[in-house]
Length: 186
Image 1 (cartoon, rainbow, N blue to C red):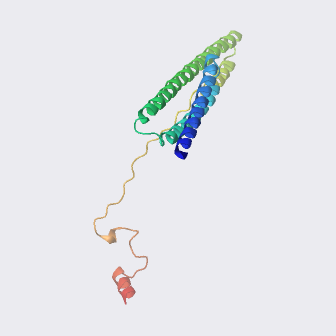
Image 2 (tube, one colour):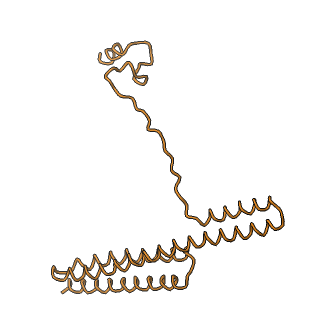
Image 3 (cartoon, one colour):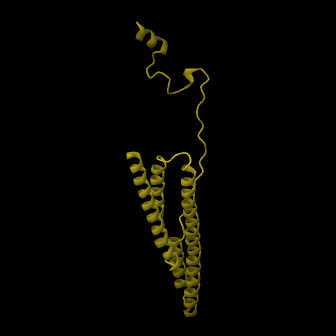
């Protein structure tokens, strides 16, 4: 009896998590439809990720109470939620990428237009300064790429059995190793 109550409670908790998941996706979809900036969309999508992870945890807690016959139906339900999440994440990523490209194109158009205006006035120095500023603005809007550096693989010494050939293993004093080892064992 108590196990059934816990199962019912877990099912209600999972249902509430699914409702929260649906609400967050709908909110983010409204932002997509309103063509909000990609940064705002990404912030809201982070909430979607958190709520989806919470839904998975609550679903797993609920499935602990299910019999073998009920389990496949619950997994199909969760699979639908996961497909909805993946589909939505693809739409968000596509939107953010397409808007990033549009922002870069607008910056290029703006820099070309500002360059033409300054050329009309005949000042070459101002054109160079404007293009430098526009390049800096474009760099701020472009996604950061990691800096990759290639290094040579360091050569490590190989041990061939002769301790006297390695500086680290050579004795500091002028006494040979054998004497030191004999003195230490006596």
